[in-house]
Length: 283
Image (tube, rainbow, N blue to C red; front, top):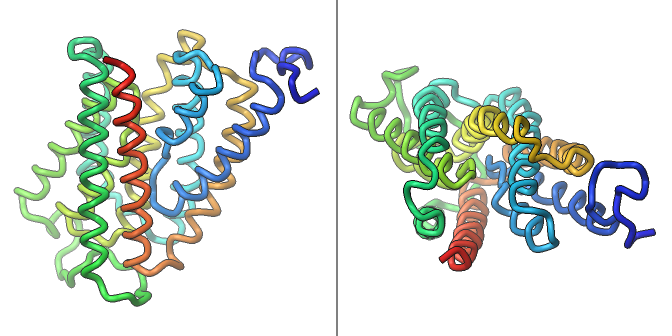
């Protein structure tokens, strides 16, 4: 039974039953971690889909849809608990959506392996940077705040024009790169939110997950049109991923800033190494 394909049960999928169970549990686990740190973490699911034999185009289309749907529940939980800053979403999210469209059309102009290698190196470096940042914070649990430093201003007035421009440029650049390689790359946006806008990592996590949902929402359209989606696996993985991300988002507010930064650093470093490994096989 476990070595039979899902197609044997009348489902339009060549994935084996044991693989479907593994992917379903994997999506739940990735969802929990992603919900905590504010990342869709499709880069952690995609390698397993490919290693176990799913066609690259089908794996990419299915994975980005799972990421988008998982981000819905996590975003809702973060928003309900006050960890989504709509001004942050606007500053980085709008340029990111524009960038992902342009990057999608321009994919193929630059070698894909080089782009993924660049993304992996940046993600791994940001992981090390957040690790060092966490080491400077006293180990204590603090309530979520809108910023790491006291601020009287609200809205866009909290940041200088230079910070807003820098964050918008990062959002556009990450969107451009993500569109070219077919990834949402929230792992690059998250540390930029923390370091450039100087906001609480919890607020960064919630806001980044919303931006990931917006980018994924536009990114999956082409895959659906080209029928590059395994719908039985999408249903299973999205269901457990949404549950896991919702639960993970609940944990964000219960973790100290220092431990949250350490977790973010560990996830970013791991994902960066995964991207570098993936890039090495494309040259």
